[in-house]
Amino acid sequence: MKVKKGDNIIVITGKDKGRKGKVIKAIPNLSKVVVEGINMKKRHQRPKKSNEKGQVLEIASPIDVSNIKLWKK
Image (tube, rainbow, N blue to C red; front, side, top):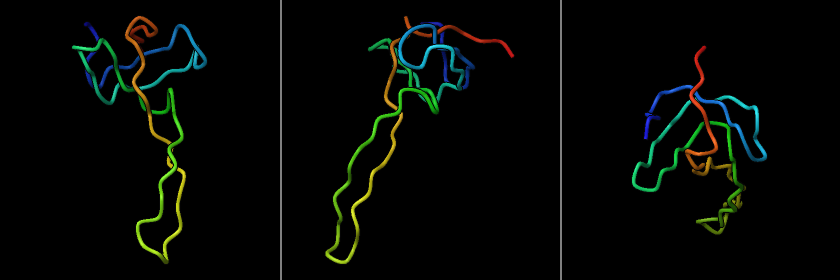
């Protein structure tokens, strides 16, 4: 896998095609990377205390390495 943490990439396929971002985390054994602001999923979190409200968090999910390409600034 040629992509490392901190590399700039561009998405070449999928719903985020054409978007650019920076690699936050690389997962070489699964051939996936996590990119900031790309492939965001919503996760609903329950309230932990009775007087607290629940919330919706947006979390970056891993994207396959075959769907990205290194991008030079």
